Each structure stands twice: as C-alpha cells, then as structure tokens.
Image 1 (tube, rainbow, N blue to C red):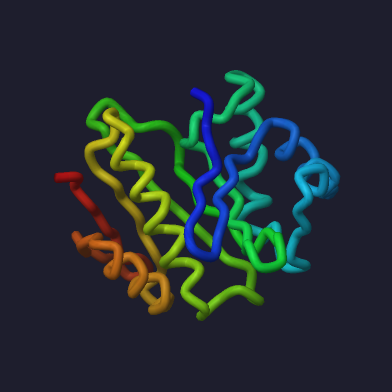
Image 2 (spheres, one colour):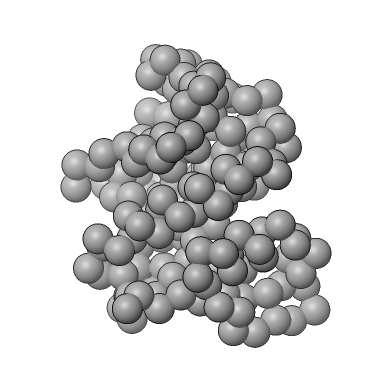
Length: 170
C-alpha cells in the first residue's frame, strides 16, 4: 500500500517508516529531520517508546507501513511532531481495530487530539477490511473520553481503571 500523508486544517499525519522507528529506538530524530520536521521536546512519549519495538518488528517484516502501525501528528504551523496516533495491529478476522493516541504535554487542550482522531477515523472509512473501531482510556482521563465521544464512539463498558469504547462503521 502506498500511503499518503493525511492533511487536516492544522495537522499532517505522517505514517511512521522502518527508518524512523529504527532512528527513534536509537534515541535519534535524524530520519524525521530529513523530512524537514522537528520534534517536540516531550515527544516521543514513554508510551510511544514502549510500542516502538513492536512497530519496528512489524515494519521490519513488511518493509512498508500499512497504515495500521502509527502516524506522527505534525503541527503545520511549526512543522513539529506533537504526538502520534495508531493501531494495535491490522484488523482482526472480525474487522476490528483498536486505536490509541497521545499528545506531548505541550500540545494538549488545543483540539489537536480531536482533529487527529477525526482524520484517522475518516481514513478508516476507506479501509474495507475495517468494520469496528475500538479504544479504551483511563477513567481519570476526562479529556480523552470527551474526544472519543465527540468522534462518535460509544462507551460499551468500564472496569475499575478503564472505559472501553466502540464505533461500528455504518
């Protein structure tokens, strides 16, 4: 699949490549800088660093991003990576994908999370193998819960720690 960047009013979502993941695992941003992009001092987050080995393994196997790894969220105003959004793998046999996202501390409470999630869900509308989009967030993460609700996801359950969300494509 030849992925294109996703453009919104204020953001560019850029699929992460094998070269970028390898560079980030070495605590380097040189591959990102080759694109004319800088990184926020608070990105990559600890959560991003935790998933990088998994993403790197997937990209090493397939060589090119499918779109179901993760995308860097870039602020168009300053060409700064302010977060990332992505998936816990390709759709399963039921057509379900699980989405996750995170913004650097400096980019929160400005509507970037909603804008990025809305854009990636629009991209998912064109993926015929996706039927259901799932997500979860900490009960204490009120901002994330609001964003998930705002894009049309419905709360399906919760436990002591998490709220579980689902969106079924029409």
